[in-house]
Image (cartoon, rainbow, N blue to C red):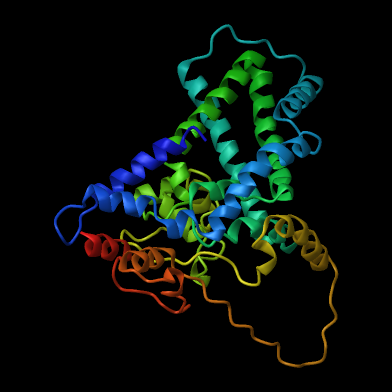
Length: 351
């Protein structure tokens, strides 16, 4: 939460400094873009806020009884290595390159944990029903980080503890417990810095894209917006947290274009995910149904259900500026793919 103001400042600077067709961006216009009621008062955003409050009070109590701990896994791995290979003499002083490799190894273990959990959440139908809660957001703000079903979090934290804890135990066996814990803490600080400077903007309406080689190494906000896209071309892409290396290695990387691709967010058949309590309870029902095989009923052609149209939030902001009484009805065509930057239209119209 402490990183939110930093993300706000960076997004504000992006709006003010981005080249426009008409001179410079006025300060008042930038504020209207940043604090758009169509985004911050959208029902999807209000549901995110409920998840923030409930997650901090209720879900956190549940997690303590259902998750492994990285420290426990690390201790078990270190003890197991001692039984197999004997006790290792703790070095008096590690070279700087060895310390850097340990910290990098832990950070890459964290990245792999995130990528692997994310991959499983999309590829296993049972897990997808819980992860779908996160993808049901129609507009993206940093609060979407907290729209996560508790089962989704429990699975992720156990995978994280197993992978990162195993790496920490390996370091503990060779370098001692103090350095292992310090390395884990430094890796966590590095990720916290990433989230404060860049990561919160992954869930936002601002198209900040890294292309070329940087786009193969680091995940920009546009990478993650592609991950949330309703376009089938973008399905199951960009699973990583901050680095694109695992996506690049396993073929799930989709590098964004430099210009805004006007992506639409949300999921289909998700009426049960529009309110807090149903979005927590109903995924259990649908996940269990995924485990029950359904017999094929003859050779009848399957019914094709057209996805419900999803408003384009940036277009809604534009309509609000123009005085439309129902701004979110301005762009409901699911095939609408404008050829111009709508944020630029908004700024130019107000300027």
